[in-house]
Image (cartoon, rainbow, N blue to C red; front, side, top):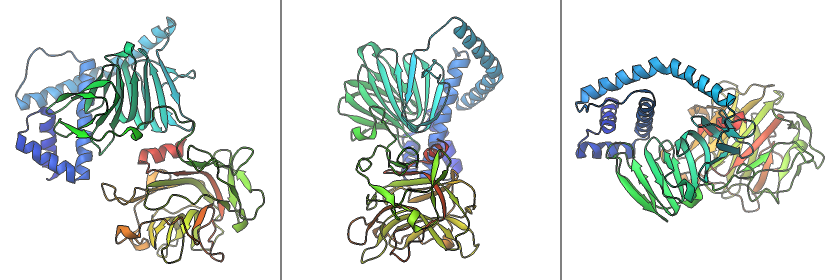
Amino acid sequence: MNRRELEQYTQGMADGILSAEEIRLLESELRTNASSRDFYRRSMRAEFLLGEAVQRRAQPSSHKITDYGMKRRKRKTLMRAVLATAALLAFSAMILQWISLREGATPDIRVTFSPGTSWSGPVDKDGTMNFGESVKIEFGVAQFDLPGDVRAVIEGPAEVRLPSAGLLELREGSGWFRVGKAGQGFRVRTPSVEVLDYGTEFGLLTRPNEYDSVHVFEGSVNCGALFAMKEKQDLMEGQALGVSPAGRWIEQELDEERFLKSLPPQLPGIHFSFDGEDPLKAEGAYPAVEEMKVQTRGGSSPKLVVGVKGKALSVRNVADVAKTDWQGIGGAAPRTIACWIRPDGGNDSRFSAIVSWGDPNGSRPGRCQIMMAKSQKSGDAVLRFALGAYVNFSGRTPIVPGEWQHIAVVFRGTGNIDGEMVELYVNGNREKMDPEFSNPPKNDGVIRTVITGTNAQPLQIGCGPYSKGRLAPFYGDIDEVWIMPRALSAREVQGLMNR
């Protein structure tokens, strides 16, 4: 299906005029083409937002218009009306807010963020916000306590809007909801579905390139698709449904583990801030953190400098490297590694390892390592990720000596839907791979990290998992190291960088 056909089919689906055969063709295209799925999701979101704006800002028409061409003209006319009144509405909103403040009105929404969450929005210092406002979560988790004994725990990246006491709009994100008896009739709406709650506990997931899904843990809800066939269905405890591109409901497996039911005391993962009384202490919500032992390879106190936030680890020789007793994430499990670096530029070595673990040699080698590597073609040092047996992925953006730069590597595992196994980021921007300086895998069998056996080396910050004579240390400063047992999205990587 070419782009023009995709646009026509998507618009036809939004207008509800596709035949059964055309719906089947569109569903087939969306199942097999990631870029088509992305376009379809964005288009449906745009339709949702436009319809929402029209409902709020334009008078409803009493005439039923069925002609397709008239529908398109009506949509354009309404859009112009919305834009024409936007300034007036914004001014009115300012006046109403001022009146509300003068009258001493108190917000009914309380928002709490987990430590380290990156967010934006009009949340006051006391953790309150007003109806009609929105919050964006780039990275982390937020809890919303609403009237009617309603609690929502939203994991980013997410966008939450609260039009009224009985409605929450989740435009993206993963949300867990608990609704008490006083809140029966509470609704949650995404660009694709609306869930009517009967006083229960449920989860709702809306992510790009995934079908929206509803998971009921207690009680029951009513699910309604907002486009195409607009099917409605009751969903009982222990059931899960996903919405298809045709607006039909499809049975899914209940997945309670995908939803956080409370705020985590720390972000999930392992974090080295190099601050506090024990600068080498690992932090974060991860089983290995509590028992992890960390020291410099030389056994002395760590060398510290002023970092991006607080202090940073300074590595000028092998003795300065931070070495742990944690063996790392093994196999082909997804992971994200991110940190700030400031290379000093005095290292002539072709490879400089930054974060590493695994088995570098032996009969079944398998390492996991992010490093700086000098391109033979340009001579510039670039970000490189080595994974498994002699597999590596290299970027193109030069790493600048003497400046703080944020780097991140995302490994999505061998079974990811779009085949984009590894993503590299420099300063929040995704890298284009350098095919001449990379050695991608020929099959999934070589993608593994070996963390057991005599040759396996634990997590180290500042050098690689090499034999004693080939440690390839990093020369410079390292700060805010994160290792997470999942693949972050681009927005989450940017949120981690901005926190």
